[in-house]
Length: 595
Image (cartoon, rainbow, N blue to C red; front, side, top):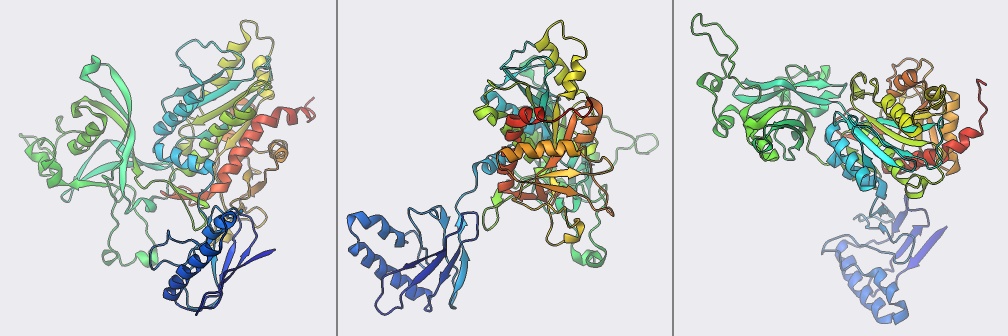
């Protein structure tokens, strides 16, 4: 259907006619323009037209007259046509300048969905796994979840909502249904808080070629070439022994917002083969970021000795051979001074730290139609955020009145390096959470096989980002399993058990979405390509819980800047919420295959 709007005739100018397609906001709505004169004539015509429309309008029609008011446009701007009181009111319809007829311009939404905007805010506060855990804890606390300590005895109640952290880098949140009975299942969504990045070495001070550099070690399988020529900084956890704290050691988070580091590429004039051989940086010798020139660094900090100033190795006075100087700092005093400024402490109060190199460019919503999120760490903070939103929104705003099981979200650290750590999925954090919760709720007489019965009635959604079809590399996907953006959460399959999905778990997960008319799609890697893995097979193996591997489709995975669709975040959050709301009823309709 086409809606045709004819503007009043303007003396000396052909009538302006617009044709606009009555499509949904998410579609590309086209605006056709038949002007043949220049932009100057258009501006003069616009003034005449607005005066004519305003004078002819009755009070009842005055809101229609404002449809042609473009006083907001500065002189020289293209014509802006606004439609009030229509389904297109939230769209900008600024046309493109052209001397030719029938120019097409896309109408652009003026805002994106709320869930995507909340994710962007979450990402900008979550530079590291430590910060992501802290931000997750803040969200849960504000929603009424009670913080627990693994060192204390737990006193849990039906209808209660709780969370705890481990190592400040992993977090488990759970809500106990008011109708919970011993042996009922845990409905769990698992994700991870870490992402590939360079991390500072224990001794990071490097001085070469008149520059102060920071020694780093690579964490995970990053696309390291994307870290070059970026405005970088540091963030992470710092151990402090403040004088005002009576010498007690505290754990504090730090994030230096301003860019203080950079990894410059080599000029093409000095690397003539890069165009034919490709960019192949050595991560040991080429990836050390520059902190400052040596001269500036020393002028801004206390000096630590003549030999260190000159960038020379300390020598033994007897034989002249290099020897380790016990007074040589592990980290550049300039770096410590920057950290001390952020933490409001003295540099000597910094005992140690775990710092990551981070990109300072903020996460944003982008794309001509505002349909993408551009950010680092989408893998896998997007999944983590959607899981948190689901446990907060399930039951119609978090209600547990009709819940018969336990809703749980577990966000792990160290997935990018295999999960084998105390805070990783290969550790005991999830098993401890489930067993302690069951024990606290059931008292001293749990009954035979309670832990095993609980596991068999439980279900895990292993959420990690998926590979969207790349338009420039379409041959990298198998034709029947090529996930697209805006088309739903991807269910991942692998015959070699790189993913834990089975036909049963995939069906259960899809049917939770079907109740709310939420789309899903499937992914299988090509036979001639390797397949990554997730926390799914690890947890399924260790706990014996039915598991499905899923993810939001994205591009540029493991780059310093990744991208995904805004609608996919909203779809994922709704799907995860539907899982918490409907899984128990759907599972009850399935026969026990092992009975």
